[in-house]
Length: 273
Ligand code: ADP
Image (cartoon, rainbow, N blue to C red):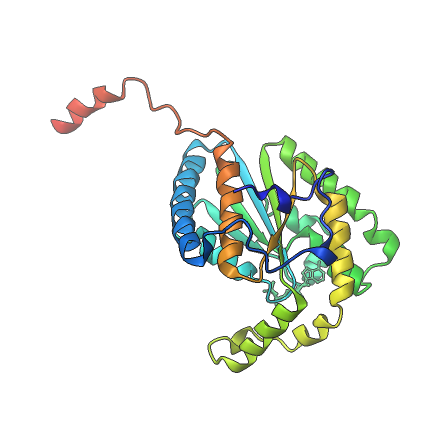
């Protein structure tokens, strides 16, 4: 699967206004076959995560951003199903608490970054401070404008210290969001997800797209790349993201740590004990 077309880079500028949220071009075999592939990727991910945890050398940070109903929760469920919960954590960033607000915007973020051997998934992130904060003018422009560079430096530091960073913007269309909100209103099992504020937020769609475009243009770096994922179809979104994560973990060339010397010598006394 050649996922390069979803990777924002200096040689591949992604323009959100032309991006197809329905795209399924990397899965020509369709949904049924792709679900099988997803299963196999999940198995690989479980194994890779085991070695990551055992080796305790690398840190992995996965950032998920999306518009409301964009599928962050579903992605986490689908992709990390079955991994060892000891080594995988999810950190969700909501409206800052008074304590968080009394600090700089990276304070709460830094506390949650992965340690050696861990995968941490950020459900929202430091990017809210140049997204919702920008769209709703929660801070003046001269404050949030500096943050792109600050975030780049922060991520550069994390990468220098051994963190693999992958950033995903789950891209749904405005039409798809409407469909998902209607489903939330009508389906009793989904009504709990409905938040009246989401309707108000939807009015700012274009401003969010502009803000996301800037995020992608200014903060996609080789050491912390942004992938824009077509997310109207959950199965396709899960397939592409799993693929990218598995490929990245494989490239770390991890291995189980060396066992203690002459490990077999311990077998005899144990069997005779
Ligand atoms: P989610 O939509 O992620 O499932 P919520 O419905 O609780 O979770 O929404 C979290 C809210 O917190 C979002 O509206 C988001 O914009 C907001 N938020 C996150 N970070 C910040 C921030 N730094 N400043 C202001 N609002 C933020």
